Amino acid sequence: MVYPTRDICFELARPEDEPELRRVMRETPMDGSIRLAFAREPDFYAAAAVEGPVHQAIVARDPQGRVLGLCSRSVRSLWVNQTPTRVGYLSALRLEEAYRGRRQLLQRGFDAVRAVAQADPATTLHMTTIFEDNAPAIRFLSANLEGFPRYRRVGTVRTLALPTWRRQRLPHGLALRAGTDADLGPIAALLHRELRRHPLAPVWTEADLRDPSRCRGLRPSDFTVAERDGRLVGCVALWDQSAYKQSIVVGYEGGLGTFRGLVNLAAPLLNVPRLPPPGEAVPHATLSHLAAEDDDEAQLSLALIASASNRAIGAGYSWLTLGVGDGDPLGDEVKRQYSAIEVRAALFLVSWPEGHAAADAFTARAPRLEIATL
Image (cartoon, rainbow, N blue to C red; front, side):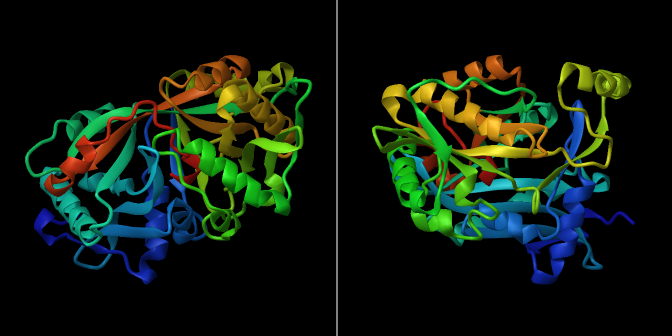
């Protein structure tokens, strides 16, 4: 049964809603040439903790108590004007298909999100990302209609999928090795020192790196570190989040749907990853915590990525994903070297009247989001 808009209520999710939150994530895939459902099995809140120490899920509920949709709000410390700043991230905006297209229902949902944000006055800046394939959502939300929050586009997040199909050549004269527990302090110091130059990059501390919730499943040995003259000058992590976050293939559109079988037949000959059948997760890990000293940032970052990619061969990953900002030359070089597939998402600052001043004050270019925490 589809209920009238007035009969739907919005509220913070309850602990007993957790299975329903996972169901909504499974059953509301994102459209595109590859239709993906971003699942959160076996515990929605395990993935939520990675997004930030503060997290809320706002749900739409029918008169029988069933969850029809949700919006996730997380808060973490990011670099803004080289200053650690609390920033809210709005994500997982999901609604069952029967209820989509109802402007009044969506407006009421945003009102509920605004009420939650107003209860946290220390966080005045909010952001969100929308895949560029989802052009209708971008047009509607960026129209800044009366009664809706203001969406101001401030950049593009490029997610690059690097196939793990061949070993990469490493530069001479640079010591690259797996991280150890003793490296976590120096890694945190490097991340703090170097990421502050990148708008909206996360603020990491050693405590964060050791926190089993904030960096769930990330071990010191998952880091690759670069040393020069006995000093740590770069790092990257190979973060496998499949134990609590999965990208499930729901289906393929267009040519991919027609020729997937042929592509998979040729995959062993071409030494490229196969396209998973519908219902299967994409086997991948994320290249995260990337930092390199600025006097040699681009070449050092490429060396770190190459070393991590070599470590991933044989580990069961078909792809490694890396997030870069539009205008970051690193993204173009990685795409060229690895023949990477690119998915683009529009980055918006989201604000209500009480937050417009904070949003207007943000003027940075080429932000670098950590996609592993989104």
